[in-house]
Image (cartoon, rainbow, N blue to C red; front, top):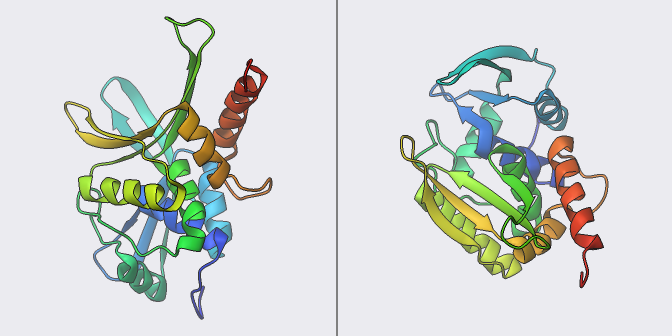
Length: 218
């Protein structure tokens, strides 16, 4: 990382993490990455070969006590300029737009986004007892970015998903995929066993896929 930057599966994943949970300072040098999962920050540091200390910080939530988050900050002018060149900017939450991600590494970038601001959720339908629901989603405060993400997934994988606005006090956009599109998308994102990822999200996803696999007709 000190001498040159080149795309790889792991680096694309790290870019996805930065896109979701990272931030660029205004000084043209420093990058911050924060997560509630220590494993996530350790994975990030491992990919970028960072030896910086992982710190702690708290974020207050209205209905809960302070929540603990893990955080790493580091300076790297070369990486900072590279991130600017692909479309990331300081204070990007509401202003982020299309990014320049190589098609061959988009699935790894998307896995980073999923581990950051994305989710999978599954449950047995209360109306149809034999129906097991699975959804995969990505969220952003920027409509332009989430529409770009939607167009990339459609172009590369033929999966459309559903785009909607959620939240009242703090509105955000969701790109949501239902059960059968989720199955196809998750196959793309987790395309081999030993990929770097957030283990708790992968475990949750695999548990859901195990239930679906055992259902009649699957």
